[in-house]
Length: 374
Image (cartoon, rainbow, N blue to C red; front, top):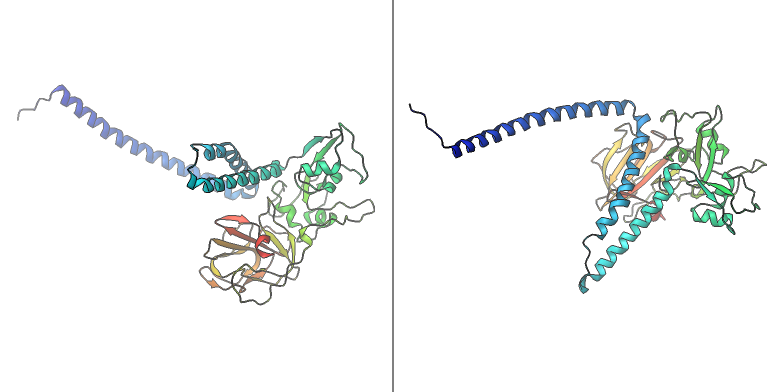
C-alpha cells in the first residue's frame, strides 16, 4: 500500500498535536509525582507536630497571629479604598455605614495589635510635666501596673528623661525562683487556684512543659490581673472582674436571651488573649445550656486544651462552647433546651483548677459573653 505523503503544513500540525499529547501526559505524570512527594512531606510534618505539639504549638500560633495582623493592616486599606467612586444619592447611607464599620474594624484591630506587642515590654522616656497617671492612660494600663513594674511609691515624682518599663497588660511581672509553681506564684499575687488560669492563658508566657506548666528558674512570667503585695505583705485593694459573683442559674425554662451557664464567680474575664469568661466554683456543680440548640461536640474528642467540652449550635448564627468538664452529659446530635444540664464543672485539659470556660460565638467570631449575660 502506497504511503500518503503529507504536506509540510500537515506535518507541522501533526508534530504540534503529538507534542501537546506528550506534554499533557508528562505534566500528569510529574504532577502526580509532585503530589505524592507533597503528601509524604505533609505526613512527616504532621507527625512531627503531633509528637511535639506542646513545643511547637505556641510558635506556630504566634507566627500565625502576627502574619494575619500584618496582612490585615497592610492589605486591608487597599481593599477598602480601591475602586471607590462618589456614591449616588440613594446609596449614600449604605456607604456611610460601610465606612463606619471599616473605622471600627481598624480601631479594634489597632488596639489589639497595640496590646499584643508580642509580649514586649516598652521603655517610656518621661517628658516635662508628664504624670504617672497620664503615662498609664496613654498605654491603656492602670497606674498601679506602671508603679509596680518600676518600683515606684504612690507619692513618687517623675523627672524628665527618666525611663519607665511599660508592660503589655495590667498585672505584675515575676521572675521565677527555684521551686516555684504556677499556683504558688498566683497565690503570691492574690490569685487562687482557679484564677491562676489567667497565667496559663496569657499567650506570651512560656513553659518547659505545656501540659504540666513546668517553669524554668529565672524566667520572667507575666501575671495578668495580679496584685503586688505592699512592704507589709498586704495585697492592694485593686481587684478585677475576677471577684464578681455570677447569679444562680437555677431551674429555668424560658427561652430568648442567654442565661448564666453555671453558678460561681468570674475568675477570668474577656480579653484580647482570652475571648471567653471563666466561672469558678471549688465545689464544681452542674453546667446548663445557655440557650436551646443542637449539640455538635461532646467529650474530649481531640486531646485539645479544652478538655471535656460541649459545643451547642443554637440555629440562629450563635454557638456556645463549655469547656473543662469533669464529665459531659450530652451526646452529639442531641437537642437540648435552655437550662438543661449538659455536664459537670471540672478541670480537664489545659486548666489549673475547677472552673467553666464559656464562649459565645457569632458567625464563628468569639464575642464577649458578658455583653449577653448581663
